[in-house]
Each structure stands twice: as structure tokens, then as C-alpha cells.
Length: 374
Image 1 (tube, rainbow, N blue to C red):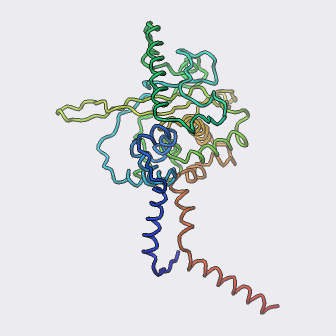
Image 2 (tube, rainbow, N blue to C red):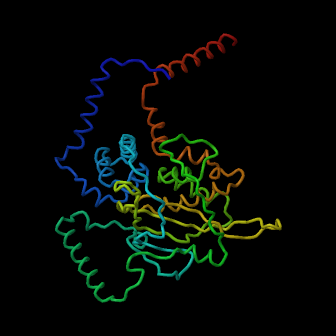
Image 3 (cartoon, helix red, strand yellow):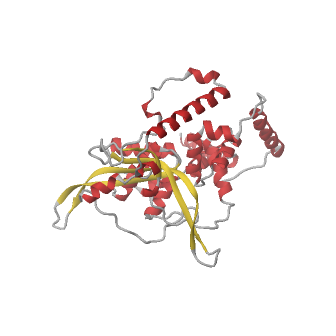
């Protein structure tokens, strides 16, 4: 790819950067990181997931700097992540230990521990809330205090203790495994691969596929998941066995005291989906047996649509259908990455003067040759 120098380019770039900054200051106000985290939480969650960096503060800063452009914010955060030292590795985390705030199943009406709707727009009318136009800080504080008082009142009336009080619930999939309707998981002690530390090669390991889907573009993962359900593969659509939104505890091991010990370092909010897929299985007698497969998705923050689509694509690549693009790991994994996709498309804005002039020269040569023969 060839480029030519542009006279005055450096000065023009400086002025372009200053103009972008000026546009951010036109109305004389500035949004705080706290306001971004509170009012744009879903966007912050999405940026953290696609950046592979769990830090609401840094995600909010990146969004502010990028003027709300999630792709630019993800690029900024990934670039920052690459400068950070990796001091520890967390131990294996069991998602059954999640402190659940939302838990639903589309497969069963009654599940052990009950369904918890939690915070979700799923049950609202999609109508604009005009009250938000003139909402003040005093209105926000008043509603918050009123709601908190109602929660305290409800807690005082509910005295019985149960495992649900700690937010921990049994897995829906475990009940199907107990009935031999879903195979028991095959334990794998293989060291997980790390897509941030090594290049992607094909065929890829499942750990790499899950990482790439987790940090893939939400829109791209959703679109390909939709394509799988609508046009390829399944005889009927998958069913959500269980969707959870909650907080996972994280631990690291260290020898600070001279003895290798495990330390709790905090918790992160995640969305986890286990989706049930109808599939044919070949038994030992080579007869096909109808069964239920499992698709899995997990990503940072409250990001339900992406986690569902991720579970669909994960199952599709684990159980490929010939001729199905969404079963082709190279097609899926190379096209859902945010920075790869936006970076390549964005580079088209850069100077291509020499290469385009070369194309024009070839076209002119062909035209002159055609005119000569005519």
C-alpha cells in the first residue's frame, strides 16, 4: 500500500484534534464518569466486554473521550489494556457461586428457587418516557430513597431464611443431567488458551472460541446468532434453559505469607446463558437418538442478547453443520472482532493516493488498448 506526503498534514491533524475537542465543549458542560456509569450502564458493560477489561471507571472514561462512540472507546481500552502488567491469574470460577440478581428460564415455568425478573426492560412498553426530559437530580434522589425504603420494609416482613437470601441458586441444567436428558460434562484439565497473548490459528480450541465471542462486537455476534436460528441448522429454535445476571467472586493464589494461599479479590458482574438445543446423537449401536445439546455464553456486565447469541454460535461451531457459515469458525471468529472489523473499515479513510492512481493507470491502458484494436 503506497502513500504520498501531504504538505501541511501535521498542522491540519493538530487542528482536527482541537476541533473535535471543541465540539465536546460547545455547550459549556461536562458529563462526569459517575453520570456515564449510572445513566449509560449497558454501554459501559458492552465496552468492558468487548475490551476484555473489567473496569467501569476506565470504560466510562473511554466513552467520554470517544464522544460516546463505542468502537473508538473499545479501541482505546484495548490499547490501554496492552500496557498493563499481568500480576496474577484467577483460580477456576464456578458460576454456581454467582450472587444472582436476575434469573429466568424459558424452558420451565417452575424452577428450584423460582424465577427472578430483576432489572430488565423486557416487561415495559417501548414508549418514550417524556418525564425524563425535565428530570432533575432531586427527582432521581427522591425516587431512589423511596424505592430503598420500600425494599427495607419488604425485607422486614420476610423473616424466613433460605439459600435464596444469599442470591445463590441451583443450576437448571443440573436437573436435566440428573434425568440423563443432557450428558454429563466432560472435565478438561487442559490449560485455557489466551487470545490476548497468542495469535488465532485454526482449528481453534474451545477456550479461544469462547473468548473471541465474549469480546466480539455485540451487533455482529447477535446478527450471526440470528442468522443461525433463522436460516441455517436448527429444525426448531433453541430454548433458554437458564439466563443469569449476577456477580461472580474471584480469587487468586499467592505466596505472600510464604505459603501458597487463596485470596478473595472482589467480584465482577456477568451474564451467563445456557441454551438447550435439540440434536441427533449416534448411540453405541449406531442408531440415531434424539437428545438435547447445550450452548454456552458468558460476558461481562448485563449483556443478555449478546450472551444468548453467543450460546447459539458456540453450539454451532462445536457441532458444525456442513455448508453452514455460522458453523465455520474461521468465518465467525475473524469477523466478529470489534477492533479488527472497525479498524480495517476505518483504514479506508486513510490516503490511498498511489494505489488508486495505479488502478486508474491500468484502466486507461486497457481503454487505450481497446481503442487501438477498434
